Image (cartoon, rainbow over the protein chains, first blue to last red):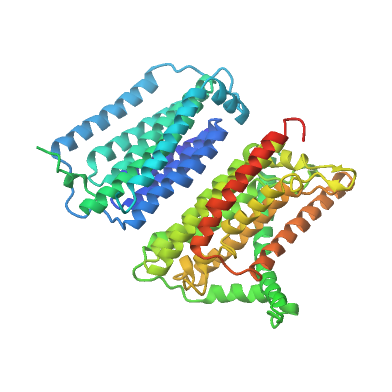
Length: 163
Length: 99
Length: 347
């Protein structure tokens, strides 16, 4: 039952991912990315990461992608207007890398024996919080500073007048 | 089974994001490709966290989401500045620093 | 019947009941709004259709069904059609985690809250309020004309700005009850001090309640924060170009959002279904609990309507200044005081 649901949403996520890569209009591509994030959120929930599923929706879909949409709308960006073709070498390289990635992925997953979970324990938010504030306190504080710097930087960069 | 599917999906999404970054000329679409790659990495983290039963993967995802948000904010601000200055969203047109 | 099938059947039944209830309440709310407006403005309000105008929502619904569906030429068709859904669905989806009473038994055990992520109920509500931004910003953009675009952008900025004090006020409640689960939060508010003052969170966290209520008004785009859809200033804001059924969806979404917000206020600050005096147990108790919950939610819905027809609306810059410079520090203050005063275990 869980597996079926997981596979369904995984397929949906793949579909949205294909749309992100294929669509030329930035607005549609951004909305497809929202679709990917929504499906991934469900997948996180099915993998036991309930807190992360919600955080993904709140932060990624609810804030970061809204920021993308804002920029796309304020600047009224349409699709790639002129004949915007990548350099043929780049296209070839992209194809090679893409194929390599897929083969590597499929091969690694199918050939190797993956370690199974000892027990599917549903961690509570409290466990995550405890870890975050004890073992990972330094990265936590560092990310706080990073976010502050990013906020101030973005504000200063996008101002109209430059002093 | 779920683990395999999750890892495969992560790989596929990462590959798709990579292709988007490499082949698209519009800066916004490149940004979206980057975000797609970050999401794929997050999925892999969570899948392994599920498989090994440890919470470290989920902590990594928390940090990744936060950093992705910061990076998107600053990146979009830079994009706005460039768009105002050069009136184009194509990265091919940003060639002042070329030889 | 296998247990899985039974759970599935019960869940589907719960969804049907809640969905039907919400939609019915939405129709009723539109009647309450118009009669309430009449009451406050010393005029009758709708009284032609049915007794006391009670069939007015039915007439409205029929009108919406039969109106011509217009899609503006410059509109981005698919997004234009998608936007009302994106507004309506998160508002209704909030009800999945809201418990509405105590469990009652019908052949098996049936609990009030619906499917779902009730262990992280509060986060789910926050996620949905974040997602409700999409409908509005897409509606504004996809309409392809100036007034909706401005209205949509303003509304989005307002929603995002007011989400933060709301989150902080919510976290004060979460801290006081040490749980993200709505059922646990409500159960922490059982009982009473001195026998008659109920242990509701509104009393120790009056500032938090005020912040949450004001942000709920802003999140539902209701007066005094409804500039983005104001009739006088912006034609009709982001839903200017919408007609007939699409507009009806926006309308329904707004009322559903109001009902969800009122339920949230009841659950978080007013003890949900707990009354200061003891209630009988069992199925009768469940009925009383649900009635208490409904009554409190109804009071807050009336409060929404009352405020709308009493207060003038804020200008946009006043609105943003209020959110960032007044509500945010107040919410912070509330959180700090809560953290200092409530130690886990002590309340």
